[in-house]
Length: 316
Image (tube, rainbow, N blue to C red; front, side):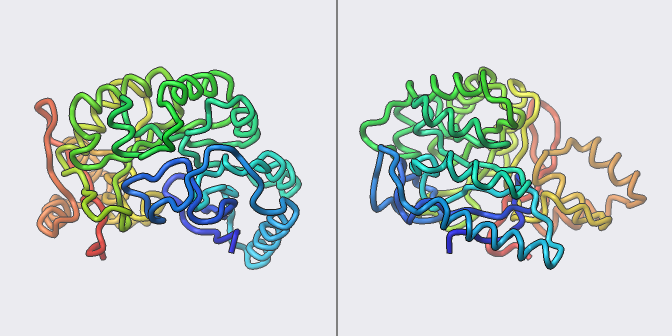
């Protein structure tokens, strides 16, 4: 099935997904990929599906969702491989415009050095580009790119795109334990993100089974440190460490609301106390969440912070 959902998205609310690339054709073979190893490494965009057939399937999904009054915030190209490998991506976006829904593309940015790819991505309303490393050596370890790619050209293309793009531009950085989560990498990534100046810089951790079993989650101290370092360079930083649905669900339940907020933004101890006061709740809630291991206390630069424990299969 090439269209799925709408499903809850940690970044986009209710997203109707579009899988415009057959599995597993990609420019990268990231160690943390939830889809598995790349079986066909490809660099040149090509045609995979007839645009009219793909759009017809999407249109049917949209109409079905509307009939049952299900909201759609975005139609999102988020395939099993790199979406810009689809030479018809621009045509598909244009064919979807009559539906009146906003369109998003989640890309690994590997082909952004091409002017035609930048022009295609400029047609979307929301674009996410990946920034997982500060240098070539770490990039090759984390993302395992096609051998003909070079990080310098990709980052130059990202800067060019960020300057001219008129939609909402965000970045995403996947933090992998002992690969790209040390101080030097975090500061290098933060420095490059400051040049790009995205509307939001997302920091994520592996929350689903990765391609390589040895891939691990950074500990809470590291996640908090990463958030603080990037926040020094980029105005709006958000964590993606909770499972889908919670980051957008403010239920009026003080526990769930606190977990929702701290899955996106670490909160200082002072901020948590203010939140509890506004919610007419006492610190029993805070202690219970810490004892359950759902909320973690950590520190950075002399301040105490609380953040939600990264999601695992044990999460209720």
